Image 1 (cartoon, one colour):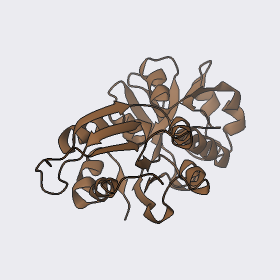
Image 2 (cartoon, rainbow, N blue to C red; image 1 turned 90 degrees about the vertical axis):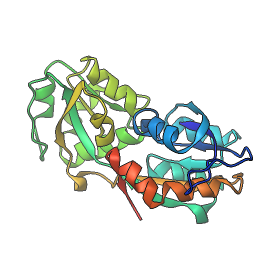
Image 3 (spheres, rainbow, N blue to C red; image 1 turned 180 degrees about the vertical axis):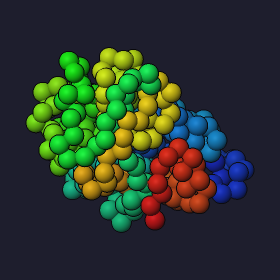
Length: 246
């Protein structure tokens, strides 16, 4: 998600007289729910454009004006850092999340996630929705978890490979797939789905959201990053199910 905002006077609640515009890329799962409400409360005059991590990283690589990159995984942050497109000394891990198996709210499916659990049988003739494992962070985590648990090969050819986590959520929300794998924060804001079970934390790499200033960032951008990592930011993130990391 690319966000254009006018900075509030962070930490005081008063508005600045000058118009500082900060452009930043943020995880696509912040596009509604937490992200939109957070910006409504803490900054004004924002414009929000949504796309996944691959899209964000490529936009920055291709010269799109951005001051902040807030990634849903470490790999895309590493991608930009190796190309010297972020300021490495400003990089920080900000948030953690959990990976969950979801079903439509009225589904009768019951599963306990464990090694060799009967995921393929639970799908029946249906498919499993999650992000594309080759480019979308949630899909990579899903493939890691299912591989660790010994069931990836059973369902690999039945995965609906979506362009972002919200698309995977929508497939389950609409009942188009009987199961999906998304982040806990996404599942929590959609009343049309329910969490079947939570994946063991040791079944996949930690879900970490790093943030950094881009190589072309304006000075004021650092103040927004500081706010996101402040106690006030922690409270907002916690309210939507994220785990602040410091």
